[in-house]
Image 1 (cartoon, rainbow, N blue to C red):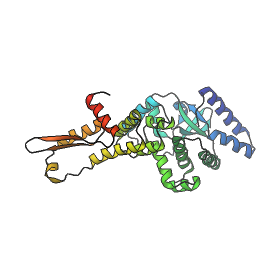
Image 2: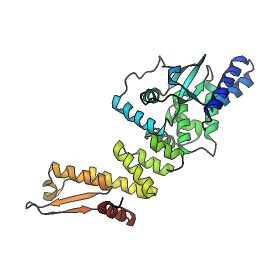
Image 3: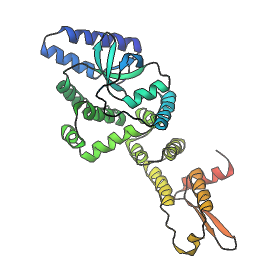
Length: 301
């Protein structure tokens, strides 16, 4: 599902749409629709009308601005889907949040899948067939799953039946599409494995998610090491306040402890006595984590 040069895509798209409109042969039309289903066109946002049946009308401005910033840096990774209205005009089917953020980012063209009317059954068949290919990366599979659910009105359960996968497998793939564009781009380029992506998708804190992504890439962390690092952060958040020492830690000290943990990428403990004496402990699980902590303290990176 790679994007070709813009001029080639535009000519190919116009030709496909024109031939679909002209043919009365069902078999030929199905073949043309199948080709169109797997084509990605670059379309100006100004040529795309919003969907009047879009159930969602309100979007979080801050989230849109964050997505726009990511799109400006990494581009729009997941194409939107539009319906051809003829005359270089299109109507949005799915992806309004991505389209709005692209406009905010000043993107002149967005990648889009183009559909024609009454191609529902052919679309589903073509997408299911495409998913069976062996050369798709995890993000391409996730995009195909989401398209099936959005455009063919399938639930996770119905989709899992169509593609012959467990529901949990389908859910894990679809969650990848909630990752920031720069992480999605790394998955697409092979920089992150499905295991890395699944672990990062389980982190709800966006700044922490991006920090973990950067550390994973910079330190070439294995999936196991990434999972250990995530657990160390989670243990800090869930650290119980048991015993007299824990009770003595003030909110200000707790805030400093958490800031140190995020900055150092490791679990940090602060133990204090009433006299003011105490200890500051940095925890690590592997030699790599130890070396990373030492380099951070010495300012080597």
